[in-house]
Length: 155
Image 1 (tube, rainbow, N blue to C red):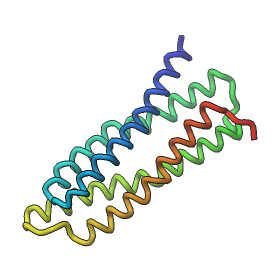
Image 2 (image 1 turned 90 degrees about the vertical axis):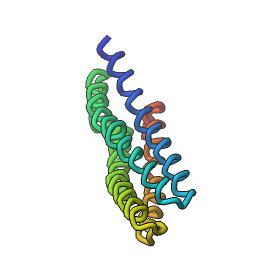
Image 3 (image 1 turned 135 degrees about the vertical axis):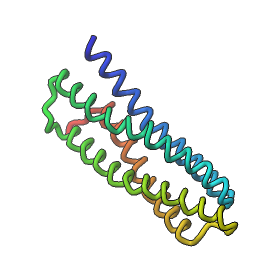
């Protein structure tokens, strides 16, 4: 029963990680497309909150539940497919941490533009481009981990 509970927790936290990431990307892209600082600030605040509440929680739960499942199933921590999953997890984190900061900074820049009655500043657009670029390897990494967990390939 412990295995089943842990597996459900692990799968659900993975779904939260992927689903929240996809939702955040969608809403941030749509807000950005309006070019309206008020919309970007409003949606951005919600996006940042969602990232901290949902994504950060899943980021913590994933390795805890994953390590417990590895132990219960009797896998070595150094299985090649697990080593590949760890590497992807690190890649995802290396992309996600700056993205969270970029989102927060973009919100602050949008709020400043609202207060000043000006368009979004050039720094906002540079941060948005970096945010967008870093999202691709992060999403690819999550999909890669899903593939590894399902297939458990032998290298």
